[in-house]
Image: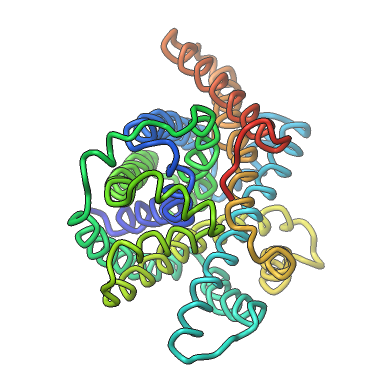
Length: 401
């Protein structure tokens, strides 16, 4: 297999398999394995399809064109503003979540190993300087780095899952939702966990616009997270009694609740090492993919602004806002992922469909009946996610944070 195809596939998969791995069991704890798996399958199908549509829009254009450029060309100023706000909100929210989550895990381990109590802000700054620096070096460096971290993540994920599978019980997997409303509340987070569309422009540029390779990369890169998510859900939801898991997560906010639940399965301390390494690697691969997309997007936005069209300014604009968020909202991991779903709907469902329709008209081609049906179904699905997130925000649906 082409080495660039492998690298691209891992960047795409790594962008998805990150914070979602930690968040998914948290919001699935009251839903049950089979219900959540059905939701994942539907979301994967919609997201893979719209990613291919977005790739198709590049058929007649330069692979160096960023998403901002493409949207302006096909959807005009209004589309450009909506997409710009959505993309920035999405990527900034995700980078915020990953810096917060990554710093949390690093701080927890450093404090445990060295017996210290380092300020969270110091860890967040160090995390951003080191791994943000990797992003600033470009897609090739992120590619190489992601390959190693992704392989490390898979190895330690395998170790953790192998350990957890020894405690899986069929009765736990057959659990039904504790509350029907929790089924709806789980959808935005699950949806965000498949949010790999933000790396489409970066991957188009990296693969020089090779549509055949790009389609393979996004199919493989989206299937891999789906497989990993299903296995991960079996290992967590199957090994811990539903009521116990739901109670622990309700009492301990964010990733710490999940970590406590997993560690509570056994008194053995050796499992802490692979567990912590996996969680850190999962957040890091996602951070690298999302931050790369944000860095490239800002670079595209600023390419005509001579005073800020330089790597240092792009770096500062990319990472200073998320860093400030983490300073003031260190526990904003799940909250940031939830609100990111609104932007994911716009950038991953609405924009690809509307751009593809415009491209077809420009080429003088007509949509097939199958495409029209698929587009209507996906648009309705997107609207339903927006409604669910709104109901959660105003307190009409339960929220696990």
